[in-house]
Image (tube, rainbow, N blue to C red; front, side):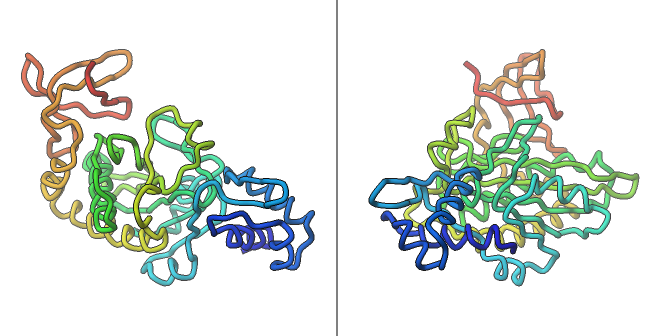
Length: 320
């Protein structure tokens, strides 16, 4: 860790309490000048951290921040684990190093300067507030058999969050996890390389842990996070368990396909047996959602019968 982030993390550790801490106290604890403290505080704000500053009282975090314990994470994961305080995108890092990776290798960051969501959307990535990670996986089949991957990853994330006591979870086809009907987590899967024998995939996922009001205003859809829980999950422990669950579920998918996940998906499908509208710009079709098929396509029942739909431009919205 470079000195730039070492100092900033030390300052954040001084602000973990629910009360204001004066700049003088922080400067004394860290053997820095007041000017240096002010400079680092301004720098933290540039990384999306909302910090209250009150003259005569000092500083306080607007929202709690839980930083990953790098040594604990790396030692607990039985694959290569890359950890960064900041990077442009965990997916971009893994795509750039795919030739050196093995299934299960993972990249984790506290901040992304160019985090991406599905269909080119920006993924808001303030420092330390959420989970941003990407897993590499070599799927030993051609790309036509990989269409159910995002559904498997969604099921894995829900399974682990439930283990940590999160209730009110739902799945939105094909790649979103919701909490109390607002988006909590998203999945972005990108292909690194594909042949007739295998497909190299980078599986990116982000989970909202503690969103500040300032950052929340930048998001163009209803969102949720885990900050309302009586005890918010520890990010390091959550990632360790999620990495293990993802490996188990992806190996299961390779052996048996989506049949092993149908019950888990249907139990949390937000739209099953409801009237929905599928938008495939510039077209749209309305019908009753009947779940998913064995390839991960969504099944929609209309007057013409039940049809399967799949594709990167499909979106799913509750019918008006």
